[in-house]
Image (tube, rainbow, N blue to C red; front, side):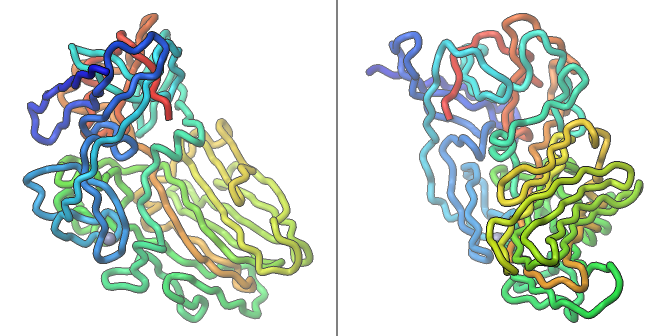
Length: 427
Ligand SMILES: [Zn+2]
């Protein structure tokens, strides 16, 4: 079957990488899937052109990064250590494009623009007015909420205690806790119950690390080394210097062992007051209650643990405030899903970086076996040189598309709505 490579070499700025482009077979039927190969970085790390695989010698974390001849050192996003690129080149990802489908929001589509063939993600549909604010896509003045599968695809891990826990290695610790109350066994934290009368919690404070020295903003350099905010860096874009954005929308997953009667809390402190999520197991049965509150409003739910008896019970607790949506899931089941009640709730990432804490009540037995934190994909409009101002109202047949790798993607922020749809990328 004859094939053709469509190449677009728009690289006026060496740090801005063109677009994701396809190699597609010509001569396929109208509705048959078209095989395509990715070129470029704008959908990375979900879909990558030729790239390098890295494994950090310090923390053993695996990640991929772009190919750059001038790259002398690679920095691990998780533990911050720098090492020489390992240089194992991986071939470009391949996808199938189905023509004739009407794209839905968040679909990845192939389209033609300026004699190039590209793929990006649809965020705006015909007839909608679109803008970008605080990292989110705004459709007709409402925050666009990503479905869970898309949220999982686009979120970015910023901490995993199994990989980058510095409580057991060199450098400043990610956790701060009172060692009279917690025992640390290779990153697994056991809480010792105490005989108490009060309702106090024995907290583990989470301290985020920012690991990219070349991104340092000199204005608040001192503050950053103390309690850095969670920002939108991406280990795929090694050595791409730019101003980073603070990310306020996060997901935190805590894998716990609990017993009947255990009480666990996640808490963040904001200028407006504290937000907390509490998880409480009944003293005599594996029934539990959860409550999220921001001090003004609350959402509650209850359920039964998967294992019977007194325990210990393994339980995985997920809390996220992605897309202004408060979501709480226990063992994968979403129990709190509030899309309107807390829509003005903002947890500043700088504050979160210094005052995200979690822990068991002083009388509870429990173990924190793993902690993972992700940031939401952070969309921003200030991609230079922007040619199209926002908000933008889309005409019939127009789609507004963005690359997942927001920092290096060239997309509708630069060339406006796209009109020549080829098809939807199958995933
Ligand atoms: Zn590492």
